[in-house]
Length: 127
Ligand SMILES: [Fe+2]
Image 1 (cartoon, helix red, strand yellow):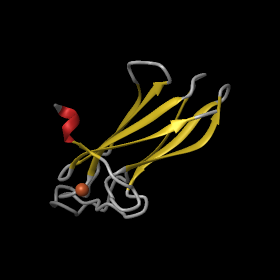
Image 2 (cartoon, protein in one colour):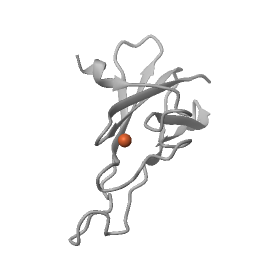
Image 3 (cartoon, helix red, strand yellow):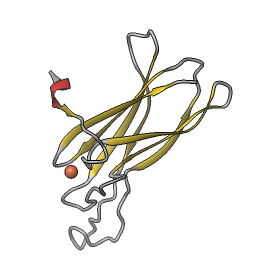
C-alpha cells in the first residue's frame, strides 16, 4: 500500500520531515500556518537533489476523510540552458497558507524529495 512508502521522524534530526507551525488561529479569522522542509537541518536544493512539492490536509475531529488545503510545487532547481546548477534560481520549500474552520482536528503535511521519497508529519489544531 502507498502508506508504506511514507516515512516520518523527528524533524529536528531528519531534514526531510515537513515542519508545520501554526502562526495564528482564530475560529473567525482563520488558521494561518507555515510548512517547510529543512528547518533545522537544511535540505540540499540543487538540480540533482531537491524537494519537489508539499501537500497540506486537514482532518476535522470526528471526520473520516481529510480535506486537502493546498498543494505547492517547487519548480526551479538551478537548471538552465547552460546545464544543471547554472541558473542561480532555486525554489525554497517554504510556504504559508491560511484556511478557515470552526472545528479542531489534525493538520497533515506531506512532502516529496526527488531522491529520498515521501515524508509526512502532523500536528493537532486546538482552539
Ligand atoms: Fe532528499
